[in-house]
Amino acid sequence: MPIGNLFKINQYNRNKFCTKVIDASAPSADFYFLVVMSTIIVAMGILSANIILVIGGMLVTPLLSPILALSLGIVINEKRVIIRSLRILLTALILAFIVSLVVGLVSHIPISRSEIIFIMKPSLFTLLIAIVAGLAASYAWVKPVLTDTLPGVAVTVTLIPPLTAIGLALAHAEWGILRDVLGAFCLNIIGIILACILVFSLMEFYKAKRQAVEEVKEEEKVIKKEKKIKEINKINKKAD
Image 1 (cartoon, rainbow, N blue to C red):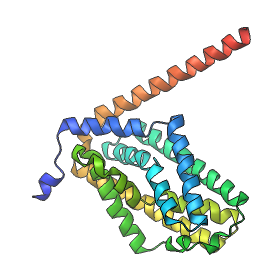
Image 2 (cartoon, rainbow, N blue to C red):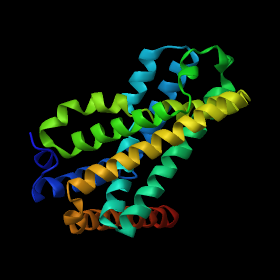
Image 3 (cartoon, rainbow, N blue to C red):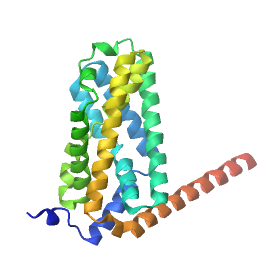
């Protein structure tokens, strides 16, 4: 298959992806609930050195979707999409950090006893893995025929384990481990974003700028409407 055809998609699929990724990364209670649940599962997996739990948490986490949305915003050069995606991503990262910190504080299991934690070290290999994972993730999300592969792709994108390990390491004052997992996390997120930008550029996603902006505007309208309903309900409660 020629490389040109590999990254060739029609406008319908570009627009469809924009709708899917904005919906998947919407700042809803469901989204943040899954962030919390995945962090707890991964934290328990790291502390108990149970790789099955860590993988399970990686399958649950929705962190990839705001990263895809952020990369899309960069490719289409749309400030509105970038700021929106950054805000959601940073909120999710802070939430995951706080949850992992709390788990670490209430846990009596030293994080240094977990073999899994020592796998998370910053290196060129870590960056290369993140780039390959980002290529696979962005490609699979765009191609409708590859929807069944998304759970497998979620496992390759190793964001939640090092992020969770940051909170655990801080809770146990393991400064050497904290430095390593923080470096691994930074390399992972940089590699994934760079890979997504490359894929979206090759797929000419700048042609879907209007669709992406419309999806974000629609999301903003829904959020404003929900806020107004809450305000009205508060006023009605006070009146009663």
